[in-house]
Structure formats: structure tokens, C-alpha cells
Image 1 (cartoon, rainbow over the protein chains, first blue to last red):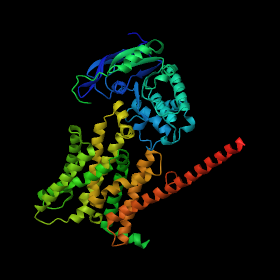
Image 2: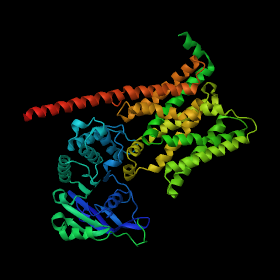
Image 3: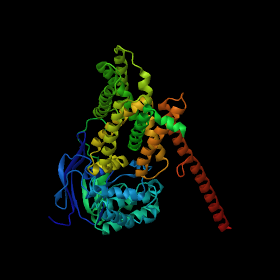
Length: 249
Length: 302
């Protein structure tokens, strides 16, 4: 097994009520990369992320991480929720949120010890959240909230970070900060898999792209794959939606 | 001083205070989970679902007994809760509507069943509770429920917190979200069985939700909300009982809920961070600040 291909997805099909949202997807990406998942609405970007997170059942296909097959949930992979789905009034501080990342490594009963505290502190420092760590989570800006969740994934010691449209709703300065945060994480050897819809910013954020349209369009280094031709193919063809039943899904 | 000595001299009052404290503690503790999981309305539905179980208990046991209430209530409420989950999953209805249908049906079954009870049952007792009449069996139930619910939830506290915060991410982390949901329902039903005696079916939701809701307005720390809710539930129940002993016209259940309601109102109005007054003051600060900044910028231009 070649080490540089950290995440290997082969022949992946995922369906909602027997209508495939992803149809025989396959690609390989290595660690220390920031990978953009691109495609029109309904292309299966979120479906792919949720499948990798162990939230959806696969119909066919395999997912390997460093040569080991991934089945169900693993602490190596962290799924970061879209900001809209979080109850920001939850009674917890930034530090409390990051501490939740340790729960998976700790199991349900083992004592939260000095090593855990150190890991949490390091994660908070890596995301430059020290001055904010005692704030309640709703008292953060959108960009800071993203970083708090990234810190939680770091505390979890996850290697693959799955992010669903993290740039949506961020203003320009916060987008820039998030971009440089991604760079830091990439340099730390993390693999970021990020769904994204703003094509204009793709070349400055991502080293690699995966173009989807229900089916696989292309995957590889941004410079080679993010071409007029591939974009055209991803965005202009009809989304594969199984057999046409003559009604909208 | 004499008042308290006299109060404690009655055996029924001693029992009521111990029972009330236990029930208040358990309900206040559980409230944090119910609020953060947004199960308050489900809890209300569950409390009403206990009627058919109670009626069956009366029919079979021949009277209003603690064990009949216990078994019947548990069965009925649990059937309704699980039935609602099943309905929501097998039809396009969501869980709230499914629950509304099932619990009203269950309640109606209870009303019909009560017609077959030979001896008239004092429904008022069941609707509003009577903690001053708490018996030994009820006290044992209260002990048992506290011992089952509090340590039980503490055992799964970490996965529960993950679930409360974000069920979807919790599931992606391998947490058995559905099993925890059922466990919470079970804890809720158990707590209600014990509080039926203290405050009755109509008011039990107040004892369950109000203490933790009060703390929710005061703190940003989960543990503080959890244990503070339990402490407030205990204190509110004891204080309510004392008030009801002092003022004869005041039924115990209503007194307990009124004390808790007063605490909640105070937190809502005067809470240091999220209270109404604090918010109004903060808004004015912000307004003044932005005004001064605007003035400042204005000066610069000229």
C-alpha cells in the first residue's frame, strides 16, 4: 500500500430511496492536502461527506484510510457540521466545545486527565482561539465558530476533516483567515475535504479538486483538473438521478 | 423557630419533605436533558399518556395504589413514546404530530376505562397530586427512581452531551443516538411516575422543566445547569411544601410550581448576562458606542 494515498474511495454508490445520489465514485487523495469537492446542486457533495462520516449507508464500494477499510464511525475522520445546524445557545464555552473532541478518545468513563487538557490547549492555540476560550460559543463570529469546530477536530486527533460549505456566510476577512487556517492544517499533515460552490475562489484555496455530478467527472491537482472543459462537463450535464420515474424528486 | 419544630414533628410532613426533595432533585436534574434535547412537549404528552395505565391499574388492583400507578403508567407512556417514534419513521408524519395523535388516543382510552371502574376514583388526586399524603411505597418509588435516573444518566453523560449538542455529528462519531433517546424517554417516564404523587399529572411538567430552564438563563456551563437545576428542584420542592403547610389554602403541588415559577421569572428579568434588564442595558451601551464612533469619524472628515 502506497503511503501517500491516505484516503482511497472506490466504486462508491449511495442512494436515497433507491435513487443513487452518488454513482460509482472513485478517487484517491493524500495527506497534507486541501481538497475541494465541486459540482452543481444535487451533485452529491454533501452525500459524499456524510458517507465518509459514516452517516449514510453505501450501496456499493469501499473506503480505505491508510490501507485500512473504514466502516462506520472512526475518530480518525471528523465531520464538521454546517453552522446552521448547531444550537449556538448550548451552555458551553469554546474550551468546553473543544473538550468534547476528547470524549471519543477517552471513551465514556475514563478520567479526563492532564494529557487531554494539554491536547485541548494545543488545539485551541493552533486555531488562535486562546483569548476567546472562555466565551460562550454564540459570542463568536462565523469565522471563529468554524475555527472552534476545527479545534475540536484537532483535539479529537482526527486526520481527515470533512467540511460542508465552510465559506458560506463568511465575510471577506473571515474567508481569508479560514483560508490561512486551512494552510496551517495542511502543513500539519491533515487532509481536508471541503465542499465548495464558489468557483472563483477554487484556485486560491485548494491544491486538489474533485469534480462531481452524481457521477465522477475528474479528480486531481487543481492546476491540471480545474479546467474549462471539466467544469463545463460537471455543470452542464444532467445530474444522474437513476431511472426517470416521470416526477420530480 | 417554633414553626419549624412543629412542622417537623408531623410524621406525614417528614415523609413529604424527604419525598419532595428526592422528586425535586431527580426532576431538576433530568430537566437539563429535556430542555437541550427539546423534549418538553414530548414530556407533556407522556404525562397524559399515563391515564389509561392508571385506569387499568385501578381496574386490576381495585384501587388507586402506588404499584398500579407505577406499572400502568410506565407501560402506557412508554408505548406511546415508542409508538410515536415508529409512526414518525414509517409514515411521512413527524414525531410531534405522531405523538399528538397517540397521546390523545391513549388519554381517551383512559377516560373510557375509568367508566368501568366500580368505585369512583378521585381524579383530582391524580391530576394535582397530594404529597402530604405520600405513603411508604411512594417513598420507596421515589428512592428507586432517583437511584435509577441520576447514576444512569451520569454513566452515559459524555455521549449524551455530544447528542444534545449535535445529534448528527454525534452519530458520525459512533454514538448510539437512538438508544440514548429511548433511555431519556425512559428516565422521563420514571421521573414522572414519582412526581405524579407530588404535583400531579398537570403540574409535573413544571417541576421537570422550570428548574433547569431557570439555570439555563443564568449560566454558560453545562455542569452548572445540570447540578444547579437539581439543587433548585430540591429547594423549590421543600420551600413549596413549607409554604403549603403554612398557608392552608395552598395545595402543595401548586405551591411548589409557584415557587419555581417565581425563581424563573426573577432569572428572566434580572439574570446578570441574559436577563431582560442586562440586555436592555447592553443595547444602550452598544448604541452609545456606535454613536460616539460615528461622531468621531465625522470629526475626522472635517
